[in-house]
Amino acid sequence: MPGAELRDSVESALGRVSRENLSALPPRIADPIRYALEGGGKRMRGMLVLAAYRAAGGTGDASGLAAAVEIIHAYSLLHDDLPCMDDDDIRRGRPTAHRVFGVRPATIAGAVMIPLAARVAHDSVRGLVLPSETCCTIVKVLMQAAGAGGMIGGQLLDLEGEGAALSRDELDVIHRAKTGALIAASLQIGGIAADATGDRLSALVGYGTRVGLAFQITDDVLDVTSSTDKLGKITGRDAALRKSTYPALLGIDGAKKRADDLVGTACEDLRLQRMLTTELEQLAEFIVSRTH
Amino acid sequence: MPGAELRDSVESALGRVSRENLSALPPRIADPIRYALEGGGKRMRGMLVLAAYRAAGGTGDASGLAAAVEIIHAYSLLHDDLPCMDDDDIRRGRPTAHRVFGVRPATIAGAVMIPLAARVAHDSVRGLVLPSETCCTIVKVLMQAAGAGGMIGGQLLDLEGEGAALSRDELDVIHRAKTGALIAASLQIGGIAADATGDRLSALVGYGTRVGLAFQITDDVLDVTSSTDKLGKITGRDAALRKSTYPALLGIDGAKKRADDLVGTACEDLRLQRMLTTELEQLAEFIVSRTH
Image 1 (cartoon, rainbow over the protein chains, first blue to last red):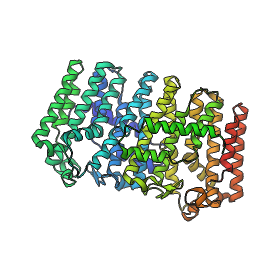
Image 2 (cartoon, each protein chain N blue to C red):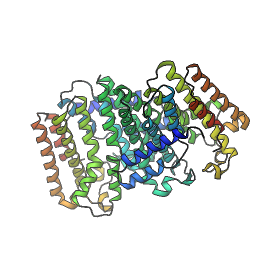
Image 3 (cartoon, rainbow over the protein chains, first blue to last red):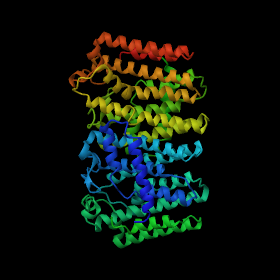
Image 4 (cartoon, helix red, strand yellow):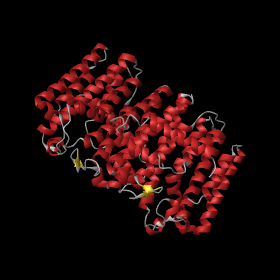
């Protein structure tokens, strides 16, 4: 996996959140939040915040913004696993939060991770000494991605699509929202923090949208081709739930090709804006070539 | 009830949110949010935002900020009613949201009301043409009140206190967080939007903290003295759950006196800062004298 240094930076920022923002809270709330934040994961979204920030010329420490995005992502996974949602027992090879802490604390912890992320983003912008205007915009983008028009809307559509035959366009709409919204927001936030505007910012967001969709397609492919052991979550689930997926619609090779094409276009657009850094290129390639 | 004009202003703002912010969402998410927002209620918190704004000299239309606070309040009630929380069937005389729409959409709708509130507050500050700095601060205060250190922490402590014998101090801590945090934030947000600072802002927040606690004490008293029909929710519940309450600790008259004292001090502090408007005085009196 590329960008070990980026990943370390995201992990450190999450450690700071755990120490500075959670220590004053009752353990019954802080513990499930910590558990959700410490669950490992690829930290793809946080790394993309940092990579976008640097690609747009940022030179400060934007790791707090990366942490904010990862908090929103962790909240979405935590709620996604709840009995009233996907009802999952395993996440990243560990029991899910509600299995460890109970449904009530897990539900509460998930919901309060949203204002926590807003707070962490706010403090991080202060640390970067950016104008208040930028602070407002970044928090707004983060909240929008976390909101009903973003990944959560997609999550509900996805759950409701179980058992239904969806077209590729319908599937794109769902996954643009479910996975793409937060990934695109990661790029947007990194870009805004480095003062990117106009075509440069659009290219970053476009990269995020395409790479986000490629990420989801690869997830679908791995659900068919990988083992539960390797993936750290139960595979073959999509088929069991009769969910529409990209491999089902396009075949495994067709799905892989679509993901490659999306990543190719994403990188090409950034190249035109002279923002295709090695980090962003490697992250995009990793997203479609990963095996877990 | 005092301040019918204030209440109308809050209702109109919530109607605008429903039309402008929710119409683009899938009905499966928008409908439970609308249901939660349209549930009537006293709109006490929204009215307090507006009253504080005016008391501090504000002359614009701050109703969007009032709506933002009411959205957070409605989210907390919606999640509070879920099967994994209080498991309530009735709220304000209507079936609770998860009874109407199902647990999954209700859980999702509740969570996305947090970023929705941030968005509505953001847009409202823009409408008032306040500096970006003020926008940042207001969204931060709102998110803090909605977070784990605020009402949600109190909610969990409250649920966990069921069956335990708590002291008056312990009960105060719970209710300062559970009810007081958002009411104090309402006053704070109204004050900040009107550019109140220093002692003037402190007096507003102090009023909010005291009146918030008085509100909770009155709620406890009504749970003993009122009927289910009148209150629109099931009464006698606290005793059935063996929850520590103010009437249980102080007797009904003692609890009522404590609420009156809190309101008296709250108003006196504002009077010293020349900010005790008729609106704020009447709202405080209503809070302890209400019968539902």
